[in-house]
Length: 178
Image 1 (tube, rainbow, N blue to C red):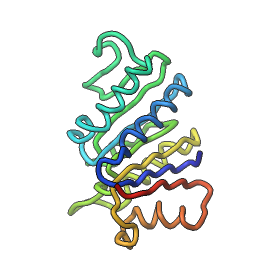
Image 2 (tube, helix red, strand yellow; image 1 turned 45 degrees about the vertical axis):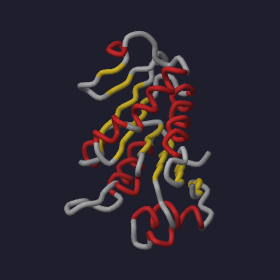
Image 3 (cartoon, rainbow, N blue to C red; image 1 turned 90 degrees about the vertical axis):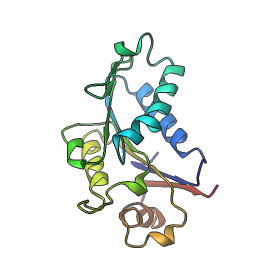
C-alpha cells in the first residue's frame, strides 16, 4: 500500500468506514505506535469518524472494559490494549497537529479542510505528511468529491489527484460515485 491513500467516493458510500477499517488494521498491526485522526472540526470528528473508529476497535477487541480506562477525553487520546496511542484533533488550527510522530494519520472530509477566510489551502495535509515522515507512515484521506475536474486549483487536485494520475507510486486513489 502506498504512503498516500485517498478514498473519494459518493454520498453514503462507505468511505469513512473504509478508512476507519484501514486505520484500525494499522493500529492492530503496529503495537506501541502513535496514530492520528482529524476532520474539519472537533464536533464532526467526534460525531462521525471517531465514533465509527471506536466501534471498530471495540469489535476487534483492541479496547476493553470501561471507556474511561482507554479513552482520555480531556487529552483526546485513545489507548488500545496493544500499547498504541490514537490522538484526535479538529483541524480548525492545523498547527495544533504538530509535535507528533505518527505511523498513520487519517483526515475525514478532506474537501472541507483548510477552507475559510484565514485558512492556508493544503496546510493540514502538509502537517499530516510531516507528522508521518519519520515513521514512513501512511496518510489516509477520505472525502466527497463529485468530479475531480471541478477541483482545478483546489489543493486536493494539485496534491492528490495529479500525482496519482501521473502514476506516482506513493499515491493510491480510490474513487467512484454513489
